[in-house]
Length: 526
Ligand SMILES: CCCCCCCCCCCCC/C=C/[C@@H](O)[C@H](COP(=O)(O)O)NC(C)=O
Ligand SMILES: Nc1ncnc2c1ncn2[C@@H]1O[C@H](COP(=O)(O)OP(=O)(O)O)[C@@H](O)[C@H]1O
Ligand SMILES: [Ca+2]
Image (cartoon, rainbow, N blue to C red; front, top):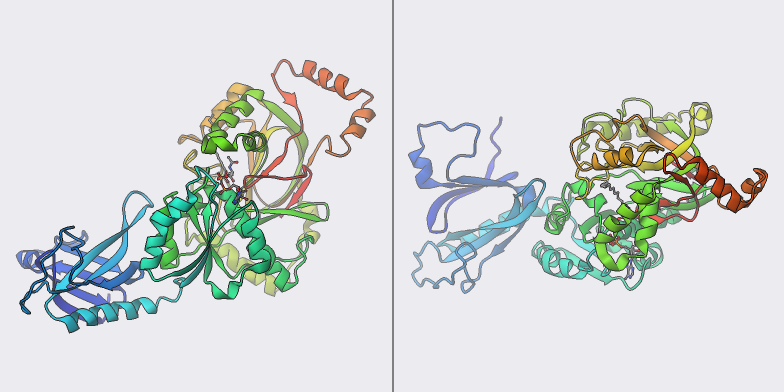
């Protein structure tokens, strides 16, 4: 490999030991000179060499010249200002950089380099800053929305104590809005915010808060592009701004499934270094009316009921989902309806693959380049593929569509472990009516290594579009019951008798759309 040309190379002190410090356009490295001398002649390949460290320039957060009278970062002790110009510690600069700690967790670490010469110190600070300025994907100005009521109601504290200090260290300017009501952030983004001023939007909250911000941005983008959101045929315009998520909610599945952890500092560092990941968005319609967008879970039956019940228990914080989960599980209701879908074609894999989608995933890359090609070639529209719809009628405990894995601390592999973040598909999971014990086995498999799809009553499909209609429509349920020649009460008691053996109850549910309840049960999703 060709050695990258050195921008700087100096002998500097770190904690009073002499280091050879080098900077090229990609890497800052420092090597303990004495240890290096001891090892000369002995080749150490592969592993990090003893006494030497390095950090990629793209993971440097900031560099700061040290004032003479500040405490030394490395020792934590106040240092006496040396009077002799020959003192090798007289001038110093500190480099703040990303350090990997636990799995997928990042931390902001720092190292202080000392030298006797002020101009050398300045040269280092200036050169590192010039290198950082070349990293154009880093945000300089951010619009931050904090939901003070999400999760354990610690959004504001998390932002003030853990995130704001590193944003300011990285010289990112911020406009911070603490929301005063639900949909405050969405409405502000949709109509008021001067988006030209910002390089991105930051969401401090949970999945519901992310959903608000995503709706605000997506709707604003469609308005400005003249795209009618109510039309299922129109192609939506992708958003120009990125959304960063500082997890401060209850499930935090969108953060966990994209970053791999729900640690606020890790997320802040990803935002600072300018990392980004494209994400699939489903649009949900009822007839010709747009209802909502979804990026994580669209769930009817079990997850719809858990959410409906948990909304009344919001005061409990994240524990509400556990209580409502047990209650919903015990009620063991099933739902009748028809699911139709357009299966995903090509090399998009199957939900039963044993792979996990990550940034740079080849399936997602392939899928987005395919989309560009098909746009240019004006390929067959979805309307012309009507005949490939698959139709499934049945009785279900749960119907879930996972557009990403939906991994979260409760289920580290998620609802659909191999779902892709940006392949243009969603994984449709149908859990048919089964015994309580079988359903419990299925649920528990979300929390361990066993395959939750390996049950006779579970089917899973990777799809581009789907529709659902309940057997008893919300508005014409009266009609359905009358047509069947029985009154509502008699009808239900008849069903109860029929189903006593399996312990199920047929009923209506609601859709859980990324943590929000949808007002309709018959939906079309694309
Ligand atoms: C008896 C043992 C049961 C264990 C089942 C574990 C399965 C957990 C799978 C959870 C998948 C969650 C998908 C994310 C949904 C969020 O959008 C939503 C809203 O999250 P938020 O309150 O905004 O953080 N949360 C829920 C629980 O519906
Ligand atoms: N200031 C506010 N007061 C009340 N609700 C709010 C406020 N700001 C946002 N919300 C709403 O709170 C809901 C839950 O927020 P979220 O941050 O996702 O927390 P959680 O993960 O606990 O559900 C969202 O639907 C959002 O619209
Ligand atoms: Ca997907």
